[in-house]
Amino acid sequence: MHVLVINSGSSSIKFSMFEVGGGQAGSPVAIYDGELGGVGTPKPGFKFADASGKDLSGGVTVHAGTIEEAIQTVEQAVGASGLPKVDAVGYRVVHPGAKLRGHQRITAEVLLALRDAESFAPLHDPVAVKIIEEMMKRLPDVPHFACFDTVFHETMPEAAKTYAIPLEYREQGVRRYGFHGLSCESIIAQIREAEMPLPRRMVIAHLGSGCSVTALIDGKSVDTTMGLTPTGGVVMGTRPGDLDPGLLIYLMRQQKGDQAKELEAMVNRKAGMVALSGMANDMRAVREAAANGDAKSLLAVEVFVRSVRKAIGGFAFLMGELDAVVFAGGIGEHDTSTRLEVMSGLEGVGILLDAAANTAKGDGLRRVSGSGSATSVYVVPAKEDWMIACHVGEMAG
Image 1 (cartoon, rainbow, N blue to C red):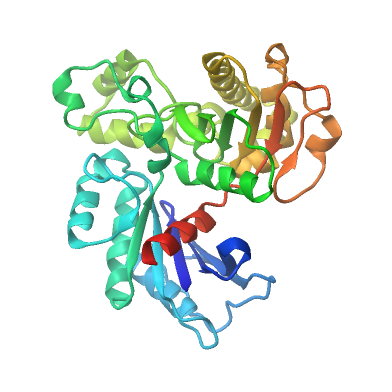
Image 2: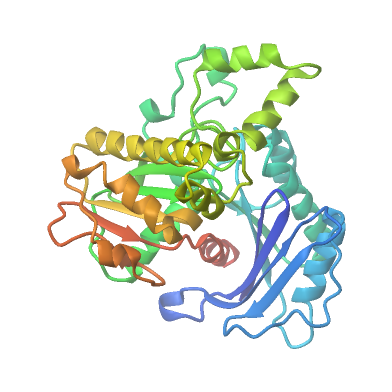
């Protein structure tokens, strides 16, 4: 079976093809991947290559002024002569809302529930729903499946899910859902594929444009930093992380016009690292500015690192002991300074990095902790698309 995976952002569409059932123990095998960036802008970027790195973008006419044009470009790319026929399509959807449980095949009823859930993740879900609708029109004869970032966290105990707010809101589905679940699940799968013993008490720090820290026991989520929406938790690229509820009320009073809309735009797109540094959402540029003595960038990095360290340390004490910490996501995988700075404050709970291992280049799962560290530290790539292909293969039979 050939599964096309669509993983969309607010202005980009990543797509990849996997052969499911053809790898070792049925593990999906990547055939190609691509990305259409700058959707909605005059100059979109387009990358498309097979698993060996061979460029496949020749002959593709790139249009991305609208979602419809972007999907037309993707359809043209994946339908090119010589490429495998699409047997099923899987989508990463951030938030299923209060009505849906578990990854599932997309029906008219599921689409209706997803539209109702758009207010839970306004940065992600509206675009994802438009893409699903457009792809289903263009590929009507294959099954389509939604895989949710929240499903992995359904194992959290009620005490971890519940907000201390009136019952009427909790009955509407207002609770802590958690996100980056597909990333976390892919990390557990990679550890098992490597035939390593699964650490019993583990923390996963998924650090990218969006960031979260998740506590796991025996490979299952027991707590996480994000809550009802992907806006809370640790500090992120354009999102503030946890805020005093009174601060949100104060900020709303400062807005003009549509107060809720203005505040929503601010906390999703204008807060976090971009607000602190005054720079674009690019950790490499912020670190370079900090290294050159820029005070705002120095503060931004310190606030970010402190929030991640607090989350890891808090979960370590919550679980009583910590067997492993995993770094994933663009920053977690590639920013050696962030790993060093986060871990340097946690020697008290037995975590020691190996400086050479931390700075060494490498792909795939690798250990970066020292031999004397009571807690193992790993860097593991977040393979969300691969995980979606796994789920689609199971659901499609």
